[in-house]
Amino acid sequence: MNTLYGIKNCDTMKKALAWCAGNGIEYTFYDYKKQGVPRERLVAWCRAIGWKTLVNTAGSTYRKLTPEQQEITTQSKAIALMVEYPSLIKRPVVETGSGQLLVGFDPNLFSSFLR
Image 1: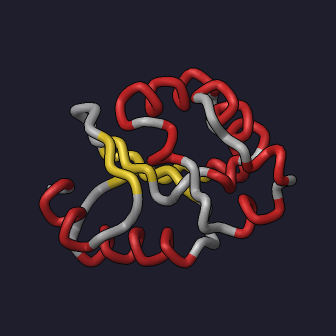
Image 2: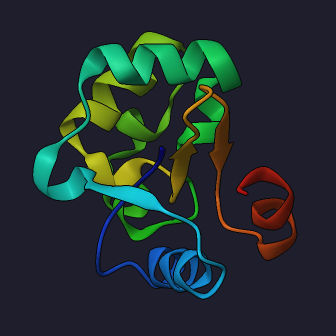
Image 3: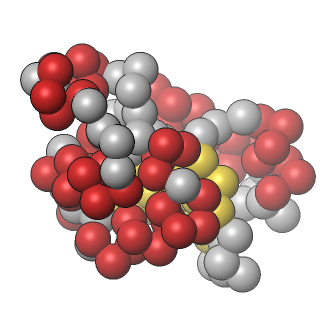
């Protein structure tokens, strides 16, 4: 089963969820703004794809951080911030049943990644 992690009211998530519905892709949705993301899961994601891929530096949550907080230089600092501010995580994060990860929404990537 595919799991889409994100925030329900995010425009990018709405596009991703609509794409899945329109293409008959089954998924479980996990709202990490409401439920948070366990630190262990963030560690696993960072090991698999790197913390720089996960941190959304273009979003309003990042812009609201202090300059000191924005100085993310290590994985442990990135994880601590993502645990504290789940909206800092790029959306969506997709986990397939086989354990593959995809971050962000691109219809072309989704069509080759999700079947």
